[in-house]
Length: 417
Image (cartoon, rainbow, N blue to C red; front, side, top):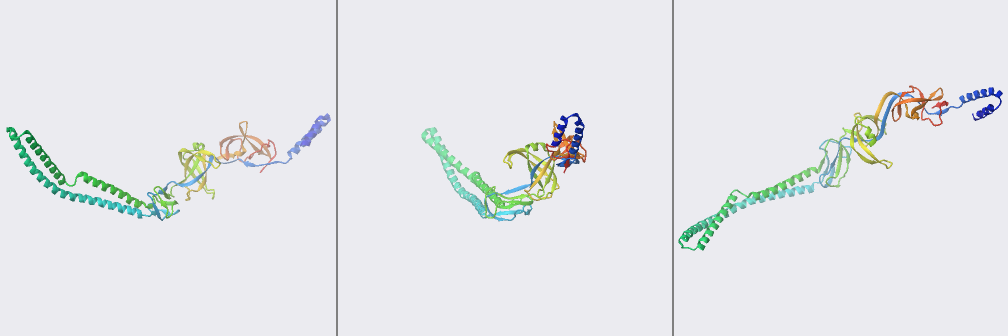
């Protein structure tokens, strides 16, 4: 072509007689151009199908109900009855703890309760002996009272006649009052003893018994808790201890999950989570087997959290739960590829998004027509991740160039591959 253009230049600068020759040469050049080698380009066809706008993430298969059984008191693991993968019913024994120390505590508390009951009984017997002593004191006080009363009454009469002094009268009065007070105290003590052991002393014994009984109940409950049982029916998904381990209150022992209720969880970027909603369709696929299931978003958590990406970038993400009624899987903790579909159209005219490019804000493709590319304006609808919806400009079966290079120009001969 370069030689042809040089020849044409020479012809055009020559005399008029060469004009006819020039026209002929140009025609020949055009013919040669049309017969040149076609440019090989990647092609794709316009068809009908699904267009989806989605985001891809990784999800984890988890049980909806997973309970970690923790130690309720300190001890040593004695036996392990269930391990990972074992199916259990609620109440099945998972493991047992050494109970020797706990039994010693229980026996000690029971002995203390017996001692307090014995003290209470002894206090009742002691009161009977004391009652006899007080009755004797009352008799003596009664005699003293009668004697002092007579003396006081006589001195009172004699004082009126001047036979005794005022000092003697007053002394006899005080003696009479003191003997009366002693008699009343003795009588009151007898009244209290007649009612039995004093209320305050009895309450002291009862309070001690109540405290020890409460402690005994806790110790017996602790003994029961040393036999660790499954809280739900399910499968043992993890075991955190082995025989001989010393555990404390709150130590994780065994994890049990319900295999009948599960979901897939994933962490979305906050921007993607803002576009999602409960009920959105989700495609779940196993990268190992290529098996696929359909699910839907069941829950979007309200709180975002920070998470560092594989590239070391801190991102804000939101947890979502995905439910699927047709999943047949029982391997908790496995990861799946998921596509959360924000928008979807089925059985619509579409083309590869890589075939569409922009010129001055409008969408175009290179359509192949009789071996040449024709710049064709198109109207685009839904823009998916792989395909775009074609509203106008193309028809089903049209062949277009995929990912056109900058060198490609309208009218060039192409060979689609």
